[in-house]
Length: 151
Ligand SMILES: [Zn+2]
Image 1 (cartoon, rainbow, N blue to C red):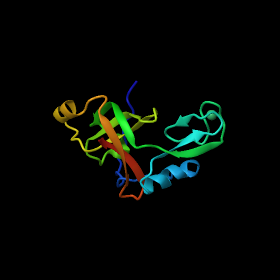
Image 2: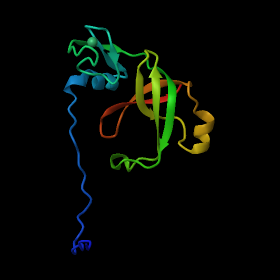
Image 3: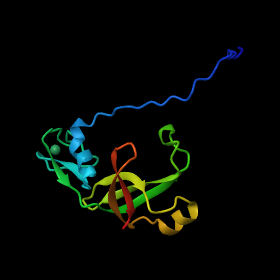
Image 4: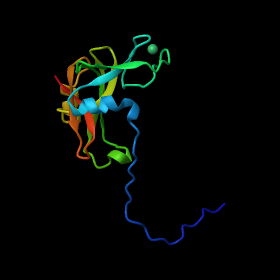
């Protein structure tokens, strides 16, 4: 079998895709971030808290959830520097992704800022169990987000 030959072509300019991600069911989370608050959902039926917030309880499937404010205190479980980035983050500098345990016992994934993402600094300054705090910010596109920083 012969490999199909590529026909002559002219490459287009790079195209940008912008997806509109629906957030109506978690809107208080995003509005809270804009105000510097770190919110999540708690099931009114069984009391389970979830992070990220969910419109329906993953334990009892109730849609009766309430919004509660989290403490913004966390402890590092693990972290890694991402050098090979997904295409949607291709323009970003190397960044650190952390998994942290929030004071409330929930796990959360987020970027870790305030530490250089080079191997020596990671090894020296990043330790499991270290105290982190959550900070909120607004991206240049106008989207609210949160990051972890060393406490
Ligand atoms: Zn529940």
